[in-house]
Length: 305
Image 1 (cartoon, one colour):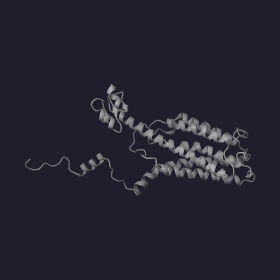
Image 2: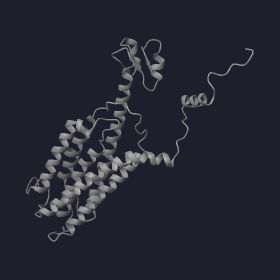
Image 3: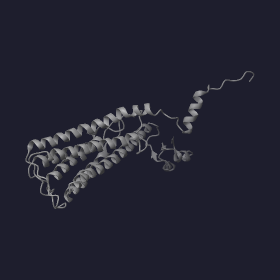
Image 4: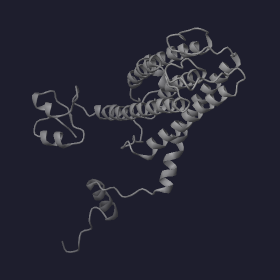
């Protein structure tokens, strides 16, 4: 609803989105006020609103995936009577997750208003499908890295009679922590896709810089002997081929996460439309529109009148 905030105050307040085209005192009843007395601002408000909604969904998905990723790591380590160290938890929660969660929401709205609309509910098929498939990929990569480490000839299992965190550092913890740390960055980038509601990922320079910096540090932790391994309670892995194999798993996770999101965006809506035909809208104006489309308009005049 667009108005000047004078005699249409009630309509501006009752509308889903009210835009006042006047800067007078009466315009305060409207959620939005345009600096120009023109409706040119309507597409911009819609683009900003869709961007905000899509960003909120992305942050929710990331926080859910972050929690489930850490849960999988802890579950794997609990089965062998160990756990992540206190400094490792701090590095994940404070350094990695907080940084990317704050910066990932700085991506601006798309420059062009598209026809598609963002999801209207969190508990929807696209959102839940993305969560479940990403969690399955995360679990598969972590388990794959763990079993690859166990199969190495230099692998020495931890002493299960010693409870955590006294049995740190060990190879199992080092592999799971290294892989999961990369996964937090991969998931943040995967759920921050741009089109059709936001600008491309590369336009968010602070977020991209944070991903590059944190990713470089994690690569250094894996390849450079002695780099922060003492404070983080990580065991040094001398097998360079195995380190490169872990980076290969990270690359596979990276490609798989983006392919999953792209496949869901492109294929899932069509499948849902085929499996579940579109139902008639319950909104009153839609019902009136259908009734008018089914009847001749204007109504034919009767003879003699």
